Image (tube, rainbow, N blue to C red; front, side):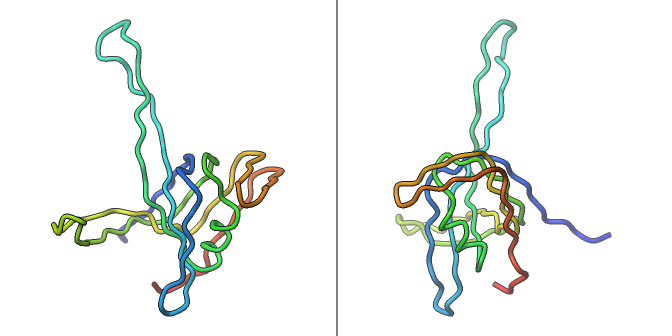
Length: 135
């Protein structure tokens, strides 16, 4: 049996994606996605709370361009991709590890979203898939 590294998330964007270009000329977009779940109260009759988890998402190529152009803060999106880990040095000089999702597919959910830099009207869900690329 083959190993599987697949993640599916449905959540809301924390902000407008940051679109950049690598030294080799590849487009890359970074954005944060919040997913929430309901947590019951610890004792009977105690109200529950909402727990939010933040995810770092990276998209490449045409998918990055589309995400950078069309996604807006608070928009509901479906993201499918794989987990990737990275090691880096923090501002304090200490080594850190991070996890992010490299998106292969993004579906824009919801109806109307307005961005400060452009108005986006969506009649319904839209789907964008990444072409297979080597990163």
